[in-house]
Amino acid sequence: MPGASSWSFREEDFKRITALLGGLLRETNVRSLLLVDRAGQIVANVGEAPQFDTQAFASLTAADFSANDQLAKMIGEHEFSSLFHQGEKESMYLADVARRVILVALFDSRTTLGLVRLKVKSAVEELTQLFEEMFNRAGTETPKIEGFGSKEAEDEIDKLFGD
Amino acid sequence: MSMINYASREINCKLVYYGPGLGGKTTNLEHVYGKVSPNTRGKMISLATETERTLFFDFLPVDLGTIRGFKTRFHLYTVPGQVYYNASRKLILKGVDGIVFVADSQLERMEANIESMQNLYDNMAEYGYDLTKIPFVVQYNKRDLPNASPIKDLQDALNPGWQVADAARQQVLPDANWPGEFLVKQLPTGEWVERAPTHEAVAVQGDGVFETLKTVSKLVLKTLG
Image (cartoon, rainbow over all chains, first blue to last red; front, side):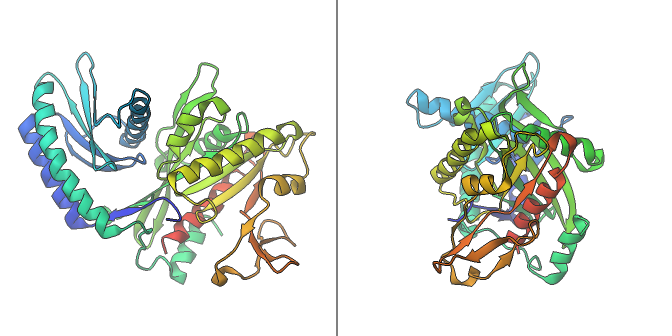
């Protein structure tokens, strides 16, 4: 593997992911659900549109999870498969999906941690299956985008940088 | 680990600025943040100590524009340069698409540069990434200082090149930034070697910052073709 493994998802993957998250949202009554990849990029978001910068949120989520993974190893655990951050009004529950993605549930007093934890657990199983299918399909090669190797694309890239 | 979303036609790529402590990694990001239009960049996040030393990372998302109908977004990260923070430094490399090594040109920082470069190779190898095969650019920062080492010395110490085994790549490639120099060339011994592209910079004044970003971004986008 020359570089980091990349992945891409198609429109139908995106529909399946958002449908699954939509179901989880209704069952748990959480405010919002976000999927973030381990490199800190936002994959999907359902529920209330967050009032914060989702990209910054995603990068911090990935860092949070990675830091906790290392802490887990230090105390002799393989990983912490979920994390819970409790606030006065707003809380968040984070769960690992297929070691590549993190599911984040943002919730308030309209639901309970117990319900969120229970429902997220089964959703994670379904998401894991879905993502594993996607990763297996993509392999570990950098995905190529049609037309990206063309002269036109090179010109567009040069133009972006004012060449 | 570039992420391509065909549903929203977006490409997200991760660039990491690596290098010794106080070398100017955060300064590079701050300059980009200050110069690009607020419409094309997100919030800059800095996890730093009270004395503004990077503790975990700085993060800045920048939209570069549209290529073949795909919106391209680059996520710029810095790592903490201090040797002490290796555990968190390694975490930031996860899923990286391109690396900028910001070297401190000052003579007395040569050892720190070499140590950091070695640390970069080691951390990449632990993830199974090969630095010679992913977009990688070296920036020689602080060129304005009187105690800056000559570029040749920096190149010999930090960017001596690696062997090119792939026959398809064994072609002379001139270095666009250094007239008379080559990125890929054949040594008198017959061996082919490749060096990472380099830029000189004075990041506090913004010199060389965008040139470096441009070189690494272009290399990353070309890997998608």
